[in-house]
Image 1 (cartoon, one colour):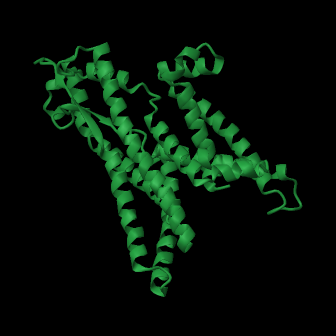
Image 2: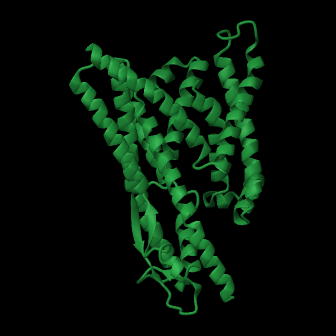
Image 3: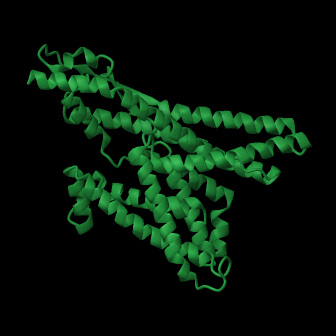
Length: 362
């Protein structure tokens, strides 16, 4: 059982549950008790209620994962104790990691879970690079193979950056109104002439979710002694296609009703898509653009992470070195996310001036 499942698993599971149950996708089930409260919190922007539900789900998930891990370690670390005696300390450790992630998210730059994962990945990456160097100097690793490993490392890094910057641009035009605050000179560097529809809006979250879903069943099969199911899941012709499909599907999902939110944003800033009537037609056009952007972004992301997993397995099998290409994608995504947050902070003074001008014009 890895640290990701113990420490980050509860937070990740709770976050996905809250997002899914509060998303517009489950509006037809809004009469159900729990879903109705989360749907109401989303519509009224009651983020405190959403946070409380997420904390409860985190605690429940930490307990369940703690039970699974404690049962898997029975008789190994503490042979004189019963396995359920380990549930509380393991669950508490997972909840503590989740708490640290929340502190980093609230007070730092970037997403807490991504930052902690990236630090752990960078620590293990230095060891892998030292192992690569020692294997090469000892003659155990040939120059062509070392060149291939480093070249694919560059491909993974370049592909991750491309996914973070990849957008499909929708041109927009602002309403002409001389008395509007939108004519403020401070907005020239803030407002764009297009709406960017990102090809990978969720960053590395689809990758993390895929890794989580692919890892947990293997441990469950071992615990339940379902050896045939475990062997079947690890077969390359089953594992890698499933890895690809899950990553693509999670990148393609839209839990926030993006086209409708983009249309509302355009109306608030006094803009429209040229040649398209505001309202249902604009939302339909934005939805079509989003589907195409997420489709190609999902294909690229799924290809990268599936190739990374396959080559990682090949390098480890042939040389005994685990590079962790998929983990490197997570590090790149975390760095790019922090960079975007810094850029947003730099625009805050300009936005403050615009808000002051708008208040003075009222």
